[in-house]
View (cartoon, rainbow, N blue to C red):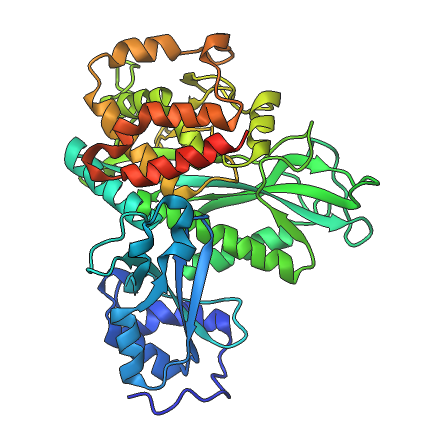
Length: 470
């Protein structure tokens, strides 16, 4: 039993607590139960419990508790709490009569909040309606439903990782800003001011259970000017491959960590598609790798042709990529990023190594003996930092299933293929206005509604909002 959660708290710092969560429980996260977490809270004298979840805007929301005793703590861990769905998902078409919803924690997601002033155990939650069924309008429900359908329909899993590009802004004179316009790629301290923050973010994410691949300074650097006294420096954190629902959670948690660290450092953190026109923008590229029997499948066969699973994914993306902009390119500056085309796609194409293509097949790292040291991936280069990752990955899962069912897949791939340095025909251009995105979404809605994943009410609402943004 928890006799008290006294404010004098633990002597161990938060870094030790992060490591202790897994070490003390002694089980993999998927095996954690409410009693395991309650024992951790008791032994480490954790004061707060935070239920975190993703809203219709794609940002993390938080509901905090100070558990009265062990029974109250276990009740919240198992049963969650009610919330107002209309305030969370109003723009996703939730009916007014269904606004009472439930938040229910997923125990395997527990982590120690590295930014809380009091030791706080945080958990990610799913959403349920008043009848106890998964809430149809919830982004979390959508990506999980789409993922289950993908596995059932195709016989493979699909894992993803996000490349999270972001700008850090600091006023001239507040840091040693040595950057040069468009020359920041892989720059090292002291020639970048955001290196320490980026490295701290990588460590915090690992401690929270978010798998990361690497981080580096990116190409974009914007010098301070009279209208904006801040210098803006671009960085990137690339995550590691996870099942689509977990990949979406990882993106949102990474953005949350970066915003918190920037605030504490007196900087601004921006994921906007453009820091300033004429300069490199921030994408949110996703890499995908199919998995079967616990092994990642190659995207290219021994004959040099695309493997079937890669064909399904690319076919789905070139067919429905414009519709995915409703979830992956939600800012007006999204169109500026695409139209100025600084290594950003502006047409519906796919190709090996081509950074201007909508879908790219990158090279695969190998050692001196030719052994692959990382899975091969298919990269979707259209989304940017305004994306809602849960809705976007749900849509891509549906597009993958649609590609699997296409009878004219070879012809679609042939029409949209480009060489490593080629450019697409102008008639294949991507939308450059919200009403055009609405038209593309309307054309792809049978694919999105298939299997009951996206509701008609949700798509009606999103299309109406896009058409109102002229």
